[in-house]
Image (cartoon, rainbow, N blue to C red; front, side):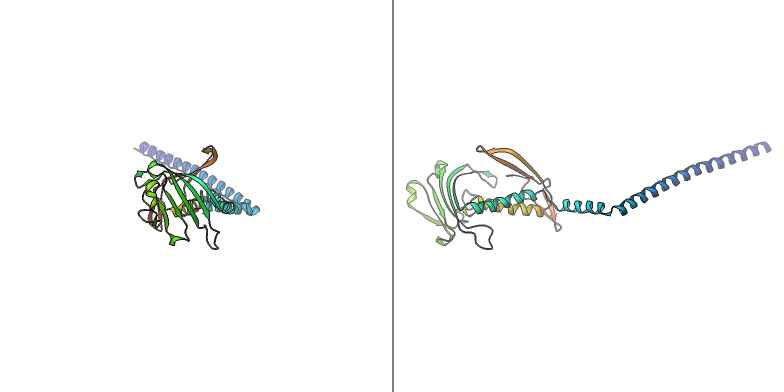
Length: 256
């Protein structure tokens, strides 16, 4: 019995000794980790005190980048193009090809001769008033139709007549009236390069206010053998929250 009790005490002492050794190893490890962390922290603090402008410049740089928007460069391009167009062009003529989707229906392509004249830019206005003449060439059912619109004449009404025998009758129509808008998504008051650039800027600013988007630019493109750049704007999400209200983007992908 005495021998057995002696062995029990030896076993207990061995367990206690082993526990003390393990605790000692763990405490030594924690002490080494804490000492290393203190040394690294002191080194970082010393570096910041010796060169305080480094962290400040990094903060400023990140703030500037955060303020930039993917649309900023293309918005500047559109503004520059608008100012250049207003400076260089008082009138022009062109052949316009129009293919519009109204609702879910894609309408046939129509071709028309456009003659456009700008009025002088008035103080406080972004765009100029435009006088417009259109003569339809295609499709055959519309060939010969003529439309003329001068914003400061005829009480803001457009004049129109059909080609051929029906051309003996000229009608006055409000640009936004149901008859004038038949087969058209946009009224005659929205035609022209200047109106297009102004609308692009307005839509770009609206998109900018709705948060981030993806902008891709592709050079080396051509339209009718003329070199150009393709700009693609993508909204990955269908809607965003504006002041807590879900707001849908006007489009998913726009190609300009």
